[in-house]
Image (cartoon, rainbow, N blue to C red; front, side):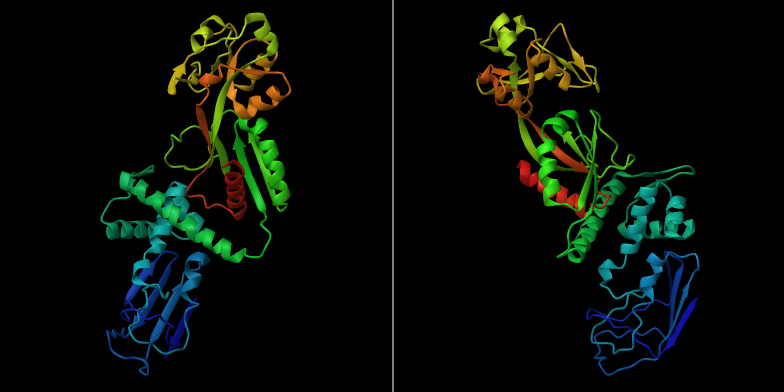
Length: 391
């Protein structure tokens, strides 16, 4: 397809100059060519018209998303003072002219290869390779290590990729906010949560969320493992503790207090410990962490100082930490758990808190997501609700 026009001028913004490159090719197979390129500098051009012959050829294989914007800006108009027309035919500030190359770079990393990215964008691998090289040349650093079989990010490339993803997410979120004003928020949220939080904290929160956002559905996965958000297709996940993977973004929900509890029947039979040292002579209920195979330490306070203590016991639980709660309720021993889990049992007289002087330690829970995966309005609504409800 070819679009030809004579004596037509682009509507432009007031910046520095009119500068249309003689020949420019970019992603999507779009070639823009202008004869008699005109430099206007600081000269007044309000009443000055120029004879322009513009050729725009669009490869039939090109992605509409990449090339459609090049044809819509052709309008008959005057060229105002201090103007600039970018080489791709768009009207924009010079500092944003490289954004198409940045988006191509992000797509290449997301798809894992230049070939896969070319298929996704509906263009050729050579076009994307040139765009990547052009971006690296502009930045003056190597972003990607290229081998015959795979691509890998350099340290600079990883930093630039994460920052670029965050920036694009901001743009997308701004568009959704504008488009969604006055409309009911609708959508679907895929959420993964650990058993402790899912069984004893989320039910009441999700009930309130569903009432407040009837147009949003939530798919809840309950598992004591860290799911791969991208590979397994999850939008959000609730995680305990600090975030070891810096490539993920964490939105803190709350600090959950810890406490030591035992059943009244156990305390009647074995007595109540008065200090931490007494725990050595009691039946404790250790939990073995699946990730390391080691017993999870109890986080305590002694004289307002944090202490980590490793419990020992005849009965140990692995995989499902809620097992220690069931054992404690049955009178099998003493366990440490979150206050939000123990509270209902204590209110019903099934558990009793002990060694209150060792209380004071907490563990953080956060909502996490991948930065390059733009959050939907439904996910944003869920995050906002959870932070307000738990903060």
